[in-house]
Amino acid sequence: MSTSSRLSDLRFKLEYYALRIAIAAVRAFPLETATAMSAWTWSRLAPVLNPKRHQRALDNLRIAFPDKPEQELNEIRRKHWENLGRVMAETMQIDRIISDPARMTIKPKAMFERYKSKLGSAIGISLHMGNWELAIWPLAVSGANPAAIYRSVTNPYVDQYLRDQRKDLYPGGLFGRGKVGDHGDDRKTARIITDYVRKGGRLGMVCDLYDRTGIPIEFFGKPAKTQAIGAMIARRVGARIWLSRCRRIGTSSRFEIELHELRAPRTANQSADIQWIMNEMQQTFEKWIRENPDQWMWSNRRWS
Image (cartoon, rainbow, N blue to C red; front, side, top):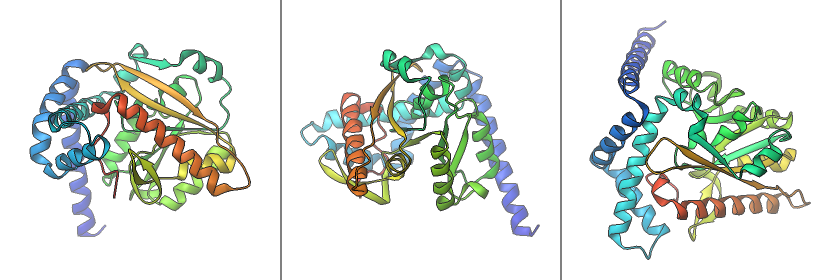
């Protein structure tokens, strides 16, 4: 191993140990206490430490709600930082949330009970709302053995730790996008996940961020380039599409997970089919965001 490689490995290990210390500190508190503390801290520090994202959140809110007064937009922005603070603390205690299923209610219950034992190939697509990691919970609790796509972390020790912590939420595994080992080749990942779904797998992903190579889809009245891989796979292999949102109940770590099925058309016009799926998906996401605007991640890039 070269000197530079040894130094990089040492840095990665130090980052990993620092993360474990921070996680231990958060886990020393009861879940609701930790999330409240994190929400308070994020709402005050995030605007100062990351003014670019703070401004982006307001710019995005102005696009989505041009008729709302500035004071109301700023209040939504503040609450969105609080939600992200809660998500951060929950990320460090995700195993405790999963082990307490009473914290999660699935809606509509009758539809879930009807389909949970006969899902077949399925793609669950969610948005960055509430605690979006938990949007996959209906597939996990139904025994569907779901996998998911996630953004790989550059630090291999941290990446492996995060994967290990989520094995009960994603028992089918995590397919990474990014730069980490065998999980970092996006083209390879696309081939793997297509085969996975074709063979009856259930795959989760989020699909509400700007994608440079995506399809322009109207979102709050303005075209937004959107990742199409979920729609393309569903159309190609005939999989069900389940849209899912994880809505936080009040300010607690309790959630309502709502499901909405999209039946992917398979006509002779593949491009039109994919366009229809993408339009329906983003219209549903827009409706959900309008209902709970303070729970969506406005500070992420959505429009070019």
